Image (cartoon, rainbow, N blue to C red; front, side):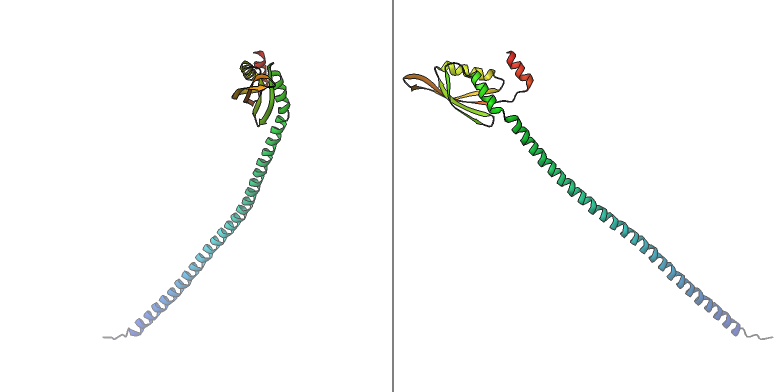
Length: 191
């Protein structure tokens, strides 16, 4: 029988398999390192792109905040101007009020009634005076109710006094000065 020694052949085969294993392990390690590097690079690129987008949005938000502040300032200026306009309109509307009040009082005061004081505080007017009788004060109150510019007469006090050897009724009352529109004036004048 022939004896063949297979040990060196097996040893060479093992050596070749070991080299093949180390080469594959090295290749897989290099490939894994390359994949990890590429993964970190791609993720880093996404992160930097997102940071750029965030920075852009922050800049735009800052610009919009400035615009909002300017709009708030404009709204405040607008409100201030509207308030001034309303004051001017009310002054314009009220400038002839004193003349209108005096003119209306001369037409509404009946004969036998004499005014000694007239005071206006906004739309409220306080008058005081003398009348020959209580009926004349009642007539004055009815005339004020019928007036398109005066309303709500409220008699505060009436008392008898002696003025220069004459017995008169001293009275004080309040009334409200109104601002009727043209239609209301025409309706009251028809009555």
